[in-house]
Amino acid sequence: MLKFVKSGFFTSVQDSGRFGYRNKGVPVAGVMDGLSSSIVNMLLDNDAHAPLLEITMTGPELLFEEETYIAMGGAEFSGKLNDNSIKNYKAYKVVAGDRLYFGNLTKGFRAYLGVKDGFQAPKVLGSSSLYKPITPINHFKDSDVVPYARCKSFHPKIQEVKVDLFLDETVLEVHKGPEYGLLTDKQLELLFFKSLSIAKENDRMAYQINENIDKHQISMLTSATLPGTVQLTPSGKLIVLMKDGQTTGGYPRILQLSDRAISILAQKRSSDTVSFRLI
Image 1: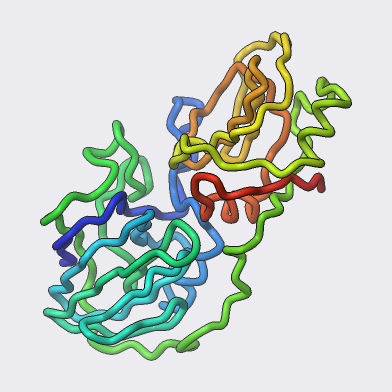
Image 2: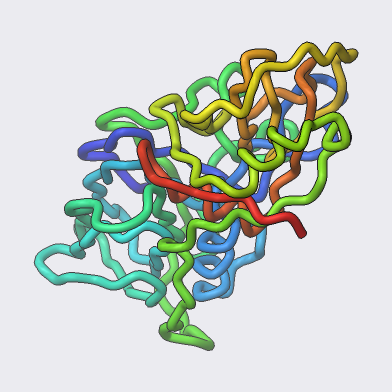
C-alpha cells in the first residue's frame, strides 16, 4: 500500500483514459500530460496504460508500505526520498517505511509518479482514472491509501533518461476545427498573432484564456467535442477543453490541439502565456 500522509492540492490516479463511452457522456479522463507520463511508465518497463499518480501544483507526502521501484516525471518538484534528493526520469528502489516528499514547485504544473507494474486502483468502465461522479472520489485526501504490487527485484533496461523538456515551450500546435472557416480576418489575427494568457479558471475540465477575440452571433447545434477542442463563446472567450471536458458543446469548435500541445498546456498555470500555430 501507498499511504497519503499529506495528500497535496490535487493528487489522483490516472491512466491513458476511458474510451468507448463518449456517446454516453463519459469523458476520456486520463493523464493530462501524456508525454511525461509515458516516459515514466517506460522507465519502469510498465504497460503504456499503467495507472500513475498525477500530482498538481503542490505535492503530497507519501509512505511506502511495500518495496518496489518508482520513477517521477513532468513538473519539477524538488523531490526527496527520505533525506536524499531525487531526480525526474530516473528509477529508484524504495523499501517499506520509505517516505517520498515533494518540495517547492520550480517548473511546470503537473508531475507523475509511477511504481513498477502500476498502481492497482479499481477499474470503472475499463479505466482506473479518477473522475467523479462515475468514481467515488476524484482526488485523494490525507490518510487515504492506494495499493500497488510488491516488487523485490527489477533491473531497468534504462536506469535514467535525459528528456528534451518541453515545460518551457509556449507554442501550441493546432489543427483547424470544424467551424474554423466562420472566423473573420480580425479574429484570425487576434488568434494567431497575439500572445494569450492562461486565466485563473483552469483545471482538468478546461483551460480558459484571458484575452477575447471579438464577439460573434454564430448559431449551431450541439456537436461532439474532444480533449483539445478550442471553443469560442459568443462573448469572444476561448475555452480549451481538457481530459475531463464535456463530450458535446454548442459553441463553435474553431481549433483542435495536437496531443503534444495538450501536454504542453497541461503544464501551464494562471498568467502563463501561450500562442497558437496552425499545422
